[in-house]
Image 1 (cartoon, rainbow over the protein chains, first blue to last red):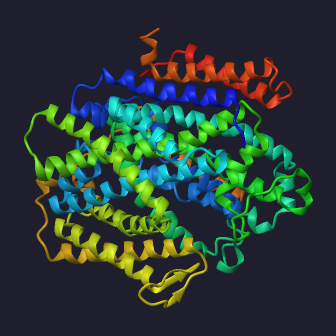
Image 2 (spheres, helix red, strand yellow):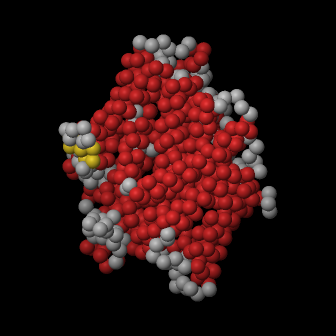
Length: 553
Length: 61
């Protein structure tokens, strides 16, 4: 793939705009809250698009196209099972607690609801996860640019990290959020022509269904038996593991996405943020799953004349992660090629900036201010927030270089993230809906859940991974293993929290008002027009989601 | 103009308008004159960009 002047010009214009946004926001930054929480001043359309864009990093875009090619239409489960329901639940039930408690972060909510040790455990694990995720995103960007464009690895790392640093350092969270919205439009509009032209080239969806195996174009039909579908999953594993544990664990508790709703102007907008975001999320498979299915269809004998091939690895296997870049190279001429490459760069930078801005908030409020330096001036925390933004970027760069030297670190970090994230939703579910839950219960539940995740991974093997304690149980796919690990960790957390809570002293009711469902005044929706009410809106989205699942059954 | 740059909707519109001009100029100046994809995409980006810049909504940032 070779870029020309017009392509480079588009990339340059993009870089100028993202840095320019940072400079424009800079003059609005007066306090630590402006820098780290946007002072709850962002309009609904921006929080909604930033909510979805924070999750639209490169691993998402490139990874979902790769999964589309590997697993077919079953990949839509990550959206229609693994996202929409949790986003609606977050908007209707959980945002009133996050927003109403005036907490500045998810760990701070845990401190208000439970105690400092639960907050500390969550804050430290989250901070470590985000900064390493940011580094992995950076590594993946540099590696991709080196592979497809032959750009120098070091220059890619330092230029992209430098640009993210400039705009997050200048404008903090607001700058990152504004750029996420720009990146959202760029990714959607930049990749849409690819989907249209490739779909047309493949003869349309009806022809794709003819040339592919039926299990590649049916989302549910072959899930009654794990051996009958490309993911190797039974539908119950999918519904509980992905649809409940992992999905709710990510969308309802991960501060990276929840933060985008917490910066809305008022409670109504905060509740509507994930629900409005669910609309583009529902349609996102058209942009990130369909190209993968088209790619694998184009490789079938009936469409061999189209001349498209997914690249192969050194061992001769299909390199699915190269599906999207190879489609761009195959279909995009100079000009739109620059748009496609810029969309890829935008997705990497979006993922990195999202992680860094979540990291600096949690570090400043939940670690530095809580445990090290209390009661300093606001200016002090503003400077710390800015300083830690730079530190976060530098750690990301270091992580990217470590990932380059030790490729397995990516797998290792993803694994550890899974251990920590898997059980988290049980803590929030019990904390918000059972007032008897105690701080000790929450803390030991999290510890037990994380330990259970590690042990489950240690005794199961899938695609050669896991089984480091004893290879006791074999699972067909790595994805199935991840779902089982998450499910076991959730169950251990859930029951440990209940047991420990029953033998420890709960907080008095007065301290739990606004933090627990039964002790909190319910939001009143009756003054609003129906399309502004979160419950009818959420139900409508759920109905459409179920309909989509039926259509592509 | 500077005031408008504080409006994210305007900034996004401006970005896509500039990109559309690059795409269309790339076709007009002949380096890739046969590319219908650049023309169609450039036209869509131009309409989207101008709409974002010119249509005023209640929710501005």
